[in-house]
Length: 196
Image 1: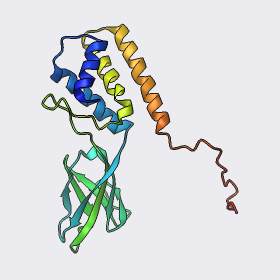
Image 2: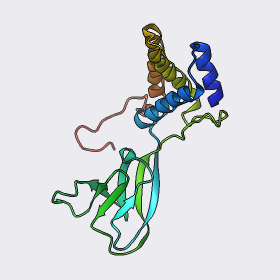
Image 3: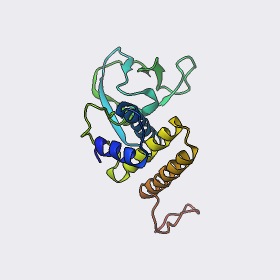
C-alpha cells in the first residue's frame, strides 16, 4: 500500500477531521515502534579506524546499536568512568558519539563495524506515493495502529478497543510468520555426547 492508500483506508474506517500531517505523524510513530520492537532489521555501518582517534559519530540513535566490532573483535559496553576488567570496550559520548578503548594505535581500513537496528524512512505528506518499509503483507498494522491513536484523540473508547484488538491480532500473526523456531521436533543433546 502507498501512503495515500493507507490514509484513504484510515479515513474509510473512521472518518475524522484530522490533517494528513497529523495522521502521517501517527503512522510514522507506529512504524518506528514496530522497527524498534518487532520488525528488527539488522544492518551495519563500517568505518576506517584512525590512529589516535577514539571517538566516532553514530549515524543512528544510540538506542539502535547492537554490536561494536573492532578489527574482528566484538567489544563490550562499559561506563568510561569505571575500571575495565577487559582490555577493550566501548562507551557512549553524549547522544551521538561512541568511544572505543584502547585508542587505535594504527589506521585500519574498515576496522570498525557498528551493527544496529535499521530505522524506517519517515513518511511525509510531500510524497503520498511512498511505500512504507514495513513488510507489505502487514501494512494494515500501520492502519489499525494509527486508528487506535485517532480514537484516543476523539476519546472514543469503543473504537480504541476495537482498533487495538485488530492491531494486536495482526501483530500476533506477524510474530508467528517471523518466528524462527522450527515447526518440527528438535532433539536436544542434554547428555552432552553429540548426535552421531
